[in-house]
Image (tube, rainbow, N blue to C red; front, side, top):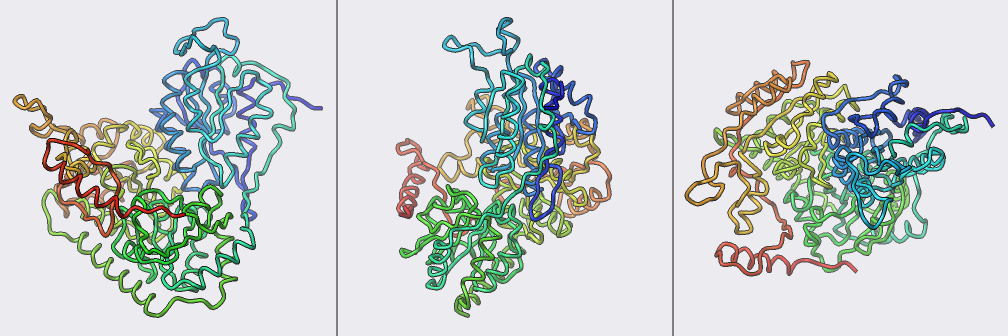
Length: 620
C-alpha cells in the first residue's frame, strides 16, 4: 500500500483540499479555505501545514467567533454545498468559537472547527491556557464544544484522522444532521508525522441526496390536502437549502394554497405573488397570522416550528387543525403530531404536485389571500413612507435600503429590533436576498456574515443592517473586509442601546430597565442620565471604512447611492427614533412576566400574560 509521510496537520489540510460535494450532477470543492488566528496551539501544526499549501487559502480574522459566523454565512449562501474550516489556538482562542459553533448547529449550517488542544503526552502539563480538573486528565476547554457540535472528536494519535475525517465530512455534507463539527487537535500531535495511506488523499465526491418520502405517508398527506378547506403552507429554510422555490410556487398555484414564511424561509415566494402572505408568527404580517389562526391544515416545508413561527403555540387556533410536515430531518417532520414526509423538500413537493391531482381551494379563499397580500403591501408602503423625524423610524431605513437594492442584492441581519421589522417589511424578490440569522439571533454576527455572503456571491451588493448594540460587540471585522477587499454597505442604526429588549422590557412592565446607553444618574444610581456620546463614525473610520453620517431620510438615500458607487466598505450611520416601532400584527410571544411584583405596570403585564397563556395549545 502506498503511503505519504506527513504531519497530522499536513494530512488534514491535504484531505480537505480533495473533498467535493455534488448534488444534481454539479460537483464543486466543498472547502473554500480556512479562517482563523494562530497561537501556540496551532501555529506549528495547522499553521505550518497551511503555509506549505498556498492553494488552500488561509484567511486572517480578528476574532475567532467572527470566523465561525463568517463561515456559517458563506455556507448558508451556498445552500450548504460549500463550507470553510476555522482554526484556533487552545484556550481563549478555542472558546471564542463556542458561540459560533452553537449558532451554526442551531441553524444547521456546516462549519469545520479545528481548535488546538492540550498536549496528548501530558508530561509537560499544565501547559499555558490549560484547564485542570482534579477528577480527570482527559479534559480541556474544548469539551465545551460537545453540546454545540453535531460531531466532536479529540485526536490523540496522528492515525486517528484516517477514521475521524470521513466521519466529519459525512456529518458536514448531511442535509439532515449538519452543523458544527469539532476536531480538537492536541498541539503536539498536530506536528507528529505518520505514514498515511495515499488513498486517504484521493479526490472524494460526497453526493448530497434528494431523499424521497415514504409512499404510504404521501398517500395520507394527499388525502388530508384534498379534504382541507383552508390549508396554509409554512415555508422554512429547508425550501432554500433544497432550492425548492420553483417547486413550491408550482404546488401553491396548482392547489391554491397561500404561503407564510419563517425567518429562514423569507423569500421562498416573491413578496408580490398573490398567494404570498409574507412573514408568519410573532414577527408576522396580519395576512399570514389571520389565515394561520383559521387554517384547518398546515403544510410545514423545511421548518422546525420555532416559537417565533408558531407564536408560542398560539398561531394555529382552528380546533380541527392538522399538520403535514415536509422535512429532510425526521426529528422535525414529526413535530405537531404531523404526517411526516421525511425527505428533500423539492423532491417531496414534486411528488405531492403529481399525486394531489385536480384539488384546488375555493375561489373565495384564493381571492381572500390575494386581497390580504395587497392590504399588507399597502401597510409596508405606509411604513416605508412614514412622515417621521428626524430622527427617522427604522421602517423608513428598511424602506430606503429596499428601494435602492436590486432584486438579487442581499440584506444581512441577526439581532435587535431589526430582525422582526425586516421579517415583516423586506420585499423579497429573490430567494437569496434575505439573509437573517435568527436561530440563535447572535449579536455581533452581522459584519462577519456580510463578508461570508459577499465571498459566496461577489456579484451581489451586500447590505449589512446592524444596530449600535450589535456593532459594538464585534466591529473589528471591518478590518477583515478591508484586508480582503470585500465591499460591504453597512447601515449602522444608532438608537442608543439595546432597544429591542428595551421595547420588550417595556411591554412586560419593566420600562426598558438597563437597556439604554446612558450615563449613570448620580441621584437615582440608575443608568438613566443623558445618552452616551459614542462616536461611531470615528470607530468605523479608524478601522478603515468609508464613513457617511445621515441625519434624515433624504441624507440616508443619498448615502446609500454614494455607498453603492464605492469600491470599499462603507459605513452609513443613521440615528433612529427607538419609540417609532413597527407594530405587531395578530400575534403573541410567550415571555414570562414576574408572578409577583410591587410595580403596578408589572402586575398589569402579568394579567395580560396569563390571558395569553390560555391560547397556547398542544398538538397531539
